[in-house]
Amino acid sequence: MSGIKISKKILYAIAGVVALIIVITIYNAGSDATLTPTLTQALSVGQSYTLENPNHGGVLLVKTPGKFGSREDESKDSENVCVVEGSTPAIVEQETVVNYMHFVKVKPTQGECAGKSGWTSKINVK
Image (cartoon, rainbow, N blue to C red; front, side, top):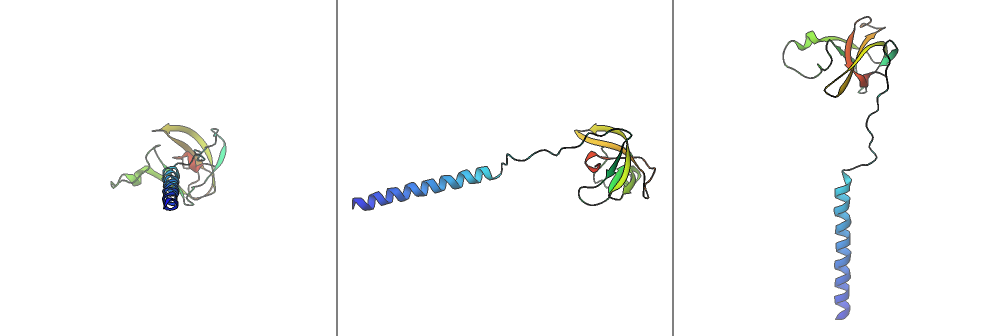
């Protein structure tokens, strides 16, 4: 009989260790210490860079920095300057920060938007 009691104690100890490992794994699964913030390059006004959308689409240029987003009013079309195709060269004219987001005023040098100045997110400038 004493052999059975020892086996139950060992079984309970193993079950407790397994449950503890599962709980620790669940709580640590959401935190990844290896994540690093997105690094943006330092830009120089007057230099030529490439406009590229990280989502592989066009790059929207607007009249005012920080005016991105979905709105239902009809004035949103009047805020848009142009949509630049990816890999288009552009010259940086100005840089600013609006609500902790970095924006750059650029003037594309090729394509349909050549010569039109507009603001875009700094993440679109490579």
